[in-house]
Image (cartoon, rainbow, N blue to C red; front, top):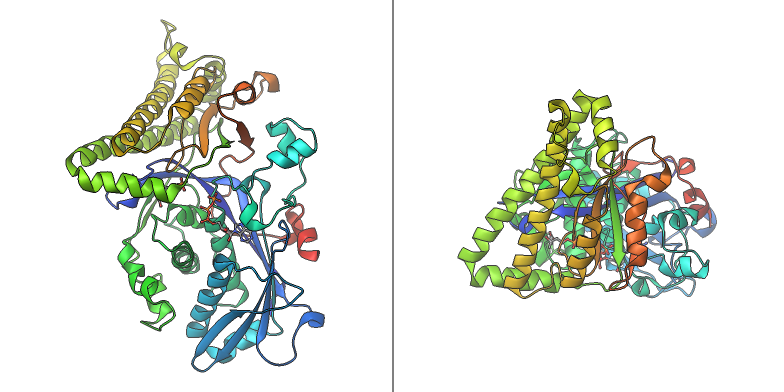
Length: 509
Ligand SMILES: Nc1ncnc2c1ncn2[C@@H]1O[C@H](COP(=O)(O)OP(=O)(O)OP(=O)(O)O)[C@@H](O)[C@H]1O
Ligand SMILES: C[C@@](O)(CCOP(=O)(O)O)CC(=O)O
């Protein structure tokens, strides 16, 4: 039995491609966030282990009230079954995301390694701790309790993995994809801990080209479990970015999961055959994407909240009823989305080719509103190339917002409702803002704003400070910043328990 296995995976922001990414004809621009979800799998302490009968798996979410689940694992020659145990020391509430992740991952291991090997790997039982960075859950109440204003500096003062003080169903989630990151980290940690994939499966760099079969298997299992738990097959962009990091994502054919979604408890076919990385039916595509250097993605949790499945249902209903209008709009929107991805990647290339010049241009643009960037009459050609690329990125974010508003009006859903339009236009008028939008399905949940983040200028001169001031003064909507931005090391990765502030203490609780 290996020592504890710690794995993390990032949250997500769908910058462009909401709704379109449900159709494999189109791709979505996904940013993996610096905020991550952690799973630690260890052997159940001997004191808590059962000497006979089914093996126990205890799962704890120390950030929540009444969030310890106990499962009994029955392994025999016919298969493996995971049932929740009734015990006064644990919660009786159900968590289908956790239970299905355990159930289906153990089923896969049973098939791959056989009952005896699985039983040996489970040994005296497992003790699983799961925790999300503070950003996954609104910290408004915690900041108010500490009499701190809703700013990035205040969020930085909060201890990591802060207790929410509530039960899971009561928490205000912030839209970073907690379930996708939870399931990806839990499935990956179990596959590693139980020896179903090599220990170095997540060692390689991000992206699909260099991905090991172990990472690809973790992806397929996490996509399957996430769809099962959510009861629908979404585009899967959130699990894909949790596994492979920031990317240009094109969805897999939902048919690959249909046999399992309909009667997953029956052994319709072997799980390992359907979920295998060599199954060509997993035809998702992951192309490299990253934000340009010296820029910062700012995310805000907007209090009102939206029901994504309802928005999706109405938009797809509109697309079915008015196919010609919808396809024309989606083709235009997709062209803008792909152009945005290309120009942001081009800026990374320009920065790599002329890093000093690029840094000078960023410092210059950071002090100007976008309308002023090209106003100067004699801009030298080499600087002009960079400025024009940023100006194109700005125009594309505005064009994407306009098309998303148009889709909302046509489908009768608040994709970028007037209050969000006013907020985003207000942000766009701030010096140093490149662009912004409503992430994913839109609505009232959140906004993203991409700002210049030049090195070597006074903190109070940073565009992020100016945007924060804008958010604090905004009255039409309650706007609270998240600390998340794009993560440097992006997809699912193995963690050193002692290297993650606060995680060891959480596990030891
Ligand atoms: N720390 C946690 N411990 C256990 N389960 C969790 C935790 N965080 C989230 N979950 C599970 O994930 C579920 C949320 O998944 P759901 O699909 O409803 O939201 P989501 O789209 O992932 O939300 P968001 O994107 O806002 O994070 C919760 O109901 C809970 O079951
Ligand atoms: C609307 C959709 O395309 C994106 C939803 O994104 P988000 O949950 O609002 O971040 C749905 C999907 O891709 O599964």
